Amino acid sequence: MFNKILIANRGEIAVRVIRAARELGIQTVAVYSEADKDALHTQLADEAVCIGPAKAADSYLNITNILSAALATKAEAIHPGFGFLSENSRFVTMCEELNIKFIGPSAEIMDKMGDKINARAEMIKAGVPVIPGSDGEVQTVEEALEIANEIGYPVMLKASAGGGGKGIRKVTSSAELPSLFTNAQQEAKAAFGNGAMYIEKVIYPARHIEVQILGDSFGNVIHLGERDCSLQRNNQKVLEESPSVAIGATKRAELGEAARKAAEHVGYENAGTIEFLFQDGNFYFMEMNTRVQVEHPVTEFVTGVDIVKEQIRIAFGEKLSKMQDEIEFTGHAIECRINAENPAFHFAPSPGKVEELFLPSGGPGLRVDSAMYQGYTIPPFYDSMIAKIIVHGENRFDALMKMQRALYEMEVEGVVTNTEFQMDLIADQNIITGDYDTSFLMEKFLPNWKPQGK
Image (cartoon, rainbow, N blue to C red):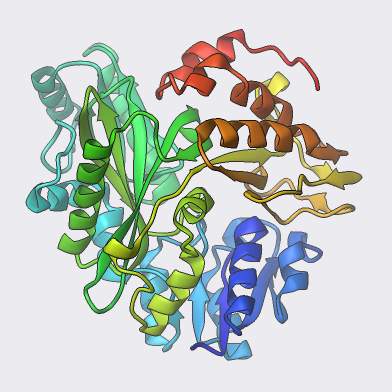
């Protein structure tokens, strides 16, 4: 096994990886920006190296500084977490050139599946259903108009290199397409350095379903079931659960096998996620994420598989711990993302000092992934997520009640969080009955939501 790994990330995912590594007997190296010198991940790791100023471009996205830290500390591998450099194939290539193992897929697979136009083509070859749309890149407004008129409105303009909701525009008519196409293309080029666009038919409302997959270097590929990620605000996930109440046993088996087949087709290695839209009994491939996901804990709860440890073992060259027929799915899991933001004021970020903190605990099936501690100052430079509350119950009702209890106990003083918003969401009748889709949060819940207080 590796003797030492470096975690090229911050916050709760850095803490998560450090803990998994320590349980495997691996020493860890944290990297941090000047704004994160007192962050929890720097305190938990065996070593910590400052890699630059607060701005992410000068620190957590600074490949040279991160690799220099790895070489200086003699780290044998790098875990990228999610976000930042986790899907940067150039970073992967540079790791390989320096004989540092990247804990994730190869640069080749990352480029193939990270580019959504290429990924779509590969899924067609694999026989996985895809959303009706363009064949390859759409380069001009005129071409976009022709395709959109053929498949019918509404359509979705998407950046091939997109992520985090950037480079995406919904178009309802030919009159608005030219300006939206240009805006999306410019946004994609600014965000990703790649303005390539493609078009898909809007499958809406639908369920946003993703399937966790794992593949090793011996050709073994398995899936760990699905997660329902339909509750989103501005294309950002808010709450996730597993399994999805919208899918029956037969369709669940088909979906899992389609995801497994997709990963096997491209020779995928390490952890990844195949994302689908599910509507009227049919599922369509949407994209593949070549990294660990924020919501991976819900899958860990229902399968008992430690995905981060599997990532490390796979990168070291070991076989998967379990084959497909050994995976058992038990109970129901839910995750709520806790952000330092003010839902009553357009979800404005709320950085600042955590004066008082109480994280929920007690009883089986409750987990809080967080890098917060009392006295910690949440910096304004990064993503606003400060914690994830994850619960597991014998059934969905048990999980819902456990989550309500956990959210009620959560206390963060000094900064505003979305805890109250999550409490109201989890108590909504539509959520309790499972009667929701991708339209619910933005179109039905938020317009009627008013802060109530505990």
